[in-house]
Image (cartoon, rainbow, N blue to C red):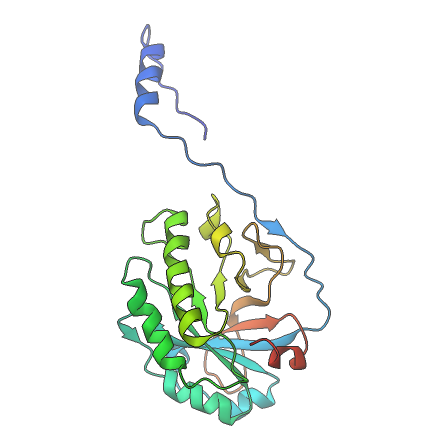
Length: 239
């Protein structure tokens, strides 16, 4: 961080010394890793919530979409009113489905995990592992966000017997902090025509959200588009 310099005749050194007592340098910015995104075959998907309103799932399937992550809730309190419908209709339309929860690190972590656990107790063998959507820090240090996310991950893993996926972007971890989460499968959010930037030390993505302005027949308005790094057969094995 470049320190500000205040200059007044005869007192500039004194002010600089005084400022050093109160100015805490920011941690160094961590450069996101850019990895080769030419993974071969990819499989297209979407992620949805009640913002997409009523979805014509058979039409979505005919448009080529093969998987969908469906929001369970925003934190512990705001349950997505379209989850049950979307969860059932995606399955009925032969779309591989997974559930995600928007993470509120300032809220009760176990209560949030229990919302996901309750929703996924009846998950099928072909359903994707649950995903934790980490986008906000609520004013907490990145390392604290990661620590709280691990509590969620450990509880969901222990209750459901699956390895949760982490959805996030590099900006949240620009000063580091993601290392404790990096053993989890990564669903990266980066809207680019090039390769996605990954928070260190992740070096590979499993899912990639490529845009939040996609268009898919059967859905009115914009929708998030995603890719899975593999074939449809690989996708069926990603759980």
